[in-house]
Image (cartoon, rainbow over all chains, first blue to last red; front, side, top):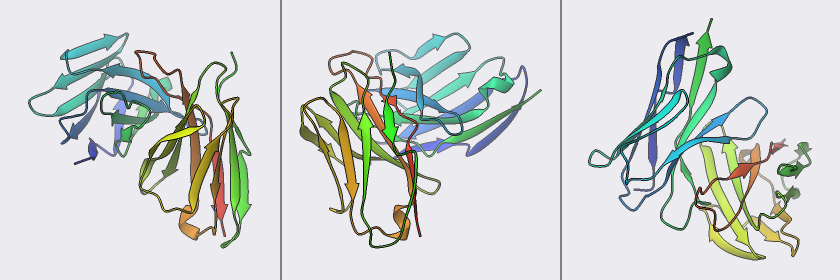
Length: 113
Length: 114
């Protein structure tokens, strides 16, 4: 019940295309859903996060869509760029416990020119 | 502002040895968390410290331990190393009370156990 399932494991997108990564969870106590981006040799960095009181959050080319009833959330990267090539992790946390993140298994995104 | 600093960045140990990893959080951050990253298991939570007290612990054996000092710096220790402990160990700090809940990760300490 603590798992966060992430798909796909890898994704290849052409420059300018849309990248979509999906995550699903079981624990309805989760109330914080961040996405982290990790480049090779670096630690993960927060990209965007959402709480269940909204269904969508957009920051620049990055959008989180959240479906509370389906217990699913997804990351959309519009106009994907080669610089977006990285590994993306979705995560979830319970209230007042955002330091203890339950991570998905990661998606390796490659954007080709 | 300096980021999260982890030392050493790389180390090689043999089975049965023990290792200590160090983490200096961002100035002003009092919460430090540790995560283990492996290709097979992904990112897994080890433990979290705040004001020198362990607040949360993940599902790791007792060979994994940690502590936090009064200046918020943290160390984690792994005793009786096993081959499966080979991983990237990531430290993250956060500003408790911030609404964003953002964790700031260091670049990690890559441990290889031979």
